[in-house]
Amino acid sequence: ARVVVLISGTGSNMAALLDAAADPGYGAGIVAVGADRASAKGIVRAQQAGVPTFTTPFSDYADRARWNTALAERIAEHRPDLVVSAGFMRILGPEVLSRYPVINIHPALLPAFPGAHAVRDALAYGVKVTGATVHFVDEGVDTGPVIEQVTVRVEPGDDVHSLHERIKAVERNMLVGVVGRLAREGWTLEDRHVRLGSAEP
Ligand code: GRF
Image (tube, rainbow, N blue to C red):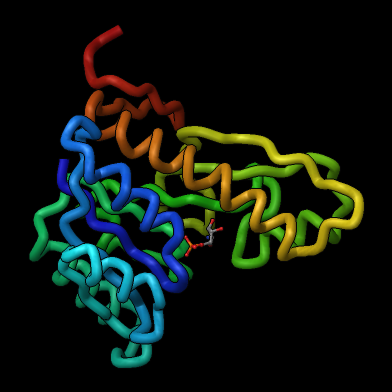
């Protein structure tokens, strides 16, 4: 399967996908990495790996729809079967979502703590367990069907940084596992319930 990865920052999840995809048995190939800002550090990592990259800065467009249209066109150049939002800090619109299945990695156990400050919000709430979620993207903010979740305990003395680092360690493994399975087995989606494997039960 051909996979385009979208990032906004460091791209550690994207890098884990690149490493996994180096194995031909993985089933998914990273055909391009895109970002919404020129400063996304992960773009350099992708370039070093010889993967095509593109940048579609949000600020270059008059409105959200035009930016989404431009992004969809850049994605389309790489003919993906699946788009992975891995630390991509923008809301995708129908211009992208109607053309490609998109999955996202979120650093909390959805539906708890959606949005851009999930780790901070979980700490502030005082939960003892949080985690990470991989889900399909719909037009809401972190509302799409859940594919997989992993828990992470909040430890005494945790701050946003320490907790987020432990979450990111489990995120990487989960994302690599989910993308590989989606690529190799396909999936079906019924009433929010994701079943891996496209074969009839
Ligand atoms: C991850 O924790 C992801 O869940 C969140 O942003 C972070 C991105 O990290 N949305 P990276 O760019 O993959 O290192």
